[in-house]
Image (cartoon, rainbow, N blue to C red; front, side, top):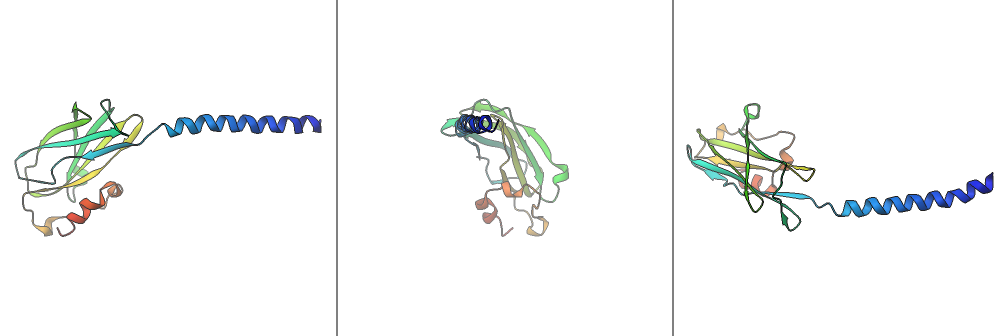
Length: 157
């Protein structure tokens, strides 16, 4: 009985190694989905604004994203955010139109689901010339999704 156990151990190890090779190969082929926000960071009050992102995976543009929805809210008022569904235009670009009716600092987060991955980059949008005292910093749980460069540019507000 002991001989049988010792003989079966190498077979189990070989089987385990073989299954790891298969899963490692499949994991390597999945590249992350990247979402680049191309919306202007400064706009005028009551001006029509195009919310826009370019979605890529590796060197390929993503033409088949499952969903791109822009969440937009004024600083300090995320509970009243607006969800705006984007449409695919071309070359991995997804766009939607909106108008900001009041001066202030706004946040736009592009909730993007493509190829079984979800990405949520966030950007500040300054509308008009808001009073710095009216701006409430965004401390939501997902604020780490914002590009560090964007936060540094607006830290004086």
